[in-house]
Length: 339
Image (cartoon, rainbow, N blue to C red; front, side, top):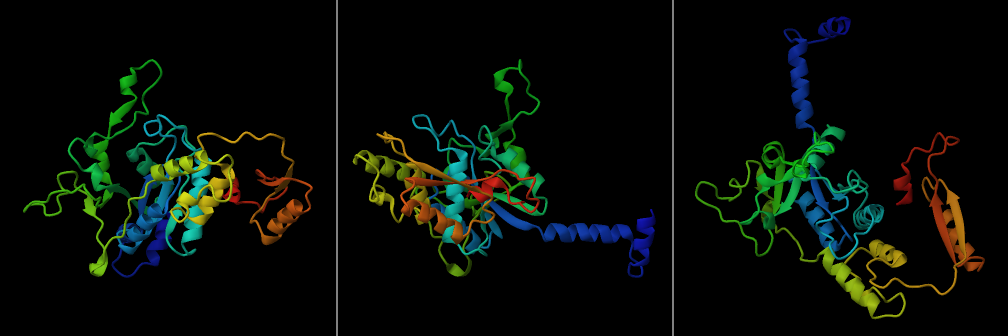
């Protein structure tokens, strides 16, 4: 009460605390950042993913684009194991930070990739909104999702009231209609997946939900896209590595230029997407280089290189530390120092 009384004395003549509070709330909503959520497995992230993210920013449909690597997707990987979330997250960070300038508003979120399984879309958007109340989130979909046989209203979410002993069929509940009512969806036109408009609805999108809109480019420019997929990258990588007895510098040349160079190097170092992992004939001598690396510097890298050049070790592994009570200034999360 004392706070309100003191605040009232500072208000313009005729204004009330309630009216100013309402105005502040409206201003806060209007000032929220518009964030387009670009979800996917990103296994690995490709140049096409980055082009799409950039074009969404260029379209001015959103202020920022966040790449959100999914949790484990059992529906997408029946015959092959999905790359661990930490590696897909790191590859996305490498892709974004080696492709765009530091001011370009494309970011990576780790809200989902370390969970036991992928989040349903509605649950993901709700989690993001709760963590970032200063943002207004929309979700990116392709027109391939707006075809006969697929209905966004049928999308499901986790039933948080489910408990062991309840029927398995009750683990999920349909929340698609609520999702379509509460969030905007930005639709990318996919070749071969047209959506027919009508006189009442020239966009053709109202039949799928009240808040869907096409991503349109300003000033008559054209949205640039590609047909490169992560699956194609995995396929080419597997073929290239299967045709060679061992991983060499040229093993992944079939995908060079299709993924950012940092991602290509990361794939090579970890030998991802190799159907026949290499069996090493002898033990490697590995030097462990521990530290906070907050941030990593050229001196750290020079030291690593010199250890290799000294031939005292075959490899050097940088091991960023966990939380250090003796270092109160160490505030960067371990996952970001790892990346």
